[in-house]
Image (cartoon, rainbow, N blue to C red; front, side, top):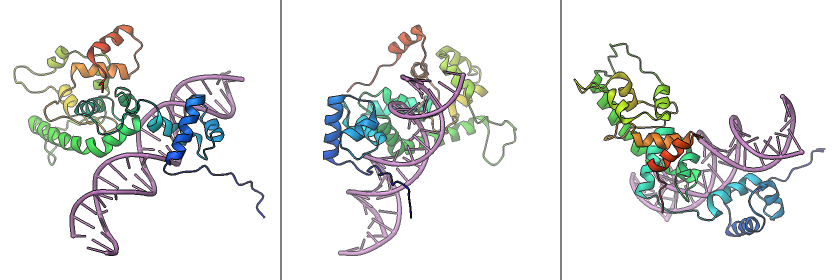
Length: 231
DNA sequence: AACATGGGCAACCGCTTTACG
DNA sequence: TCGTAAAGCGGTTGCCCATGT
């Protein structure tokens, strides 16, 4: 005979409107936080995590629903290029959008778009430096990571510095710059625009903020460099 | 009409980080 | 300093619906 106490499993699956109402009323009365208590005291048979997620992603005030604007899409693309799958950071730049929404939007809409862009850019780059897939005769192994690139960006590499990486006599790309143009980042998530192969000066400000810099000067520069996309 | 397939999205899982005693 | 609970986060799963065959 089983002597184990059967622990009641929290309810799962899609939220019903009445559950939303319960949660909304409870949070509006008692405030956010202590989600385990919310699930108990509100009468919801949901886990605390589930309640928190539902509130954060759907019930919280000022949540923006519906399709992304061109500006929002563009910002997601740029930021993802810089910082990869840091969805909460990206969402933080989009008022009313949640990390889950940004993540889903990326996975369903933007990833495909950008994959095409990357393929084109890599093909173009390989052509420029004489690499082809079948004959890697120059033994130049491309590193998998681009740490130096990321550091440069984090330190706010200037446009001038960036330009200096290009051989002005031939117009061809020096090795490092070339990496910056086509680099597949550590998380394999970034991409390259067809018409925008290099990280811009402006983009470096975005990354600065995302790195959580405490430096006030940098913060003020960021404010100048990048504004949130307002509805 | 019935079934298969794929896209979109909400929700869950599990790991990491943070807060607190 | 350590242990624990709560919260945060990104990856993954599974359901629903539209479209194609």
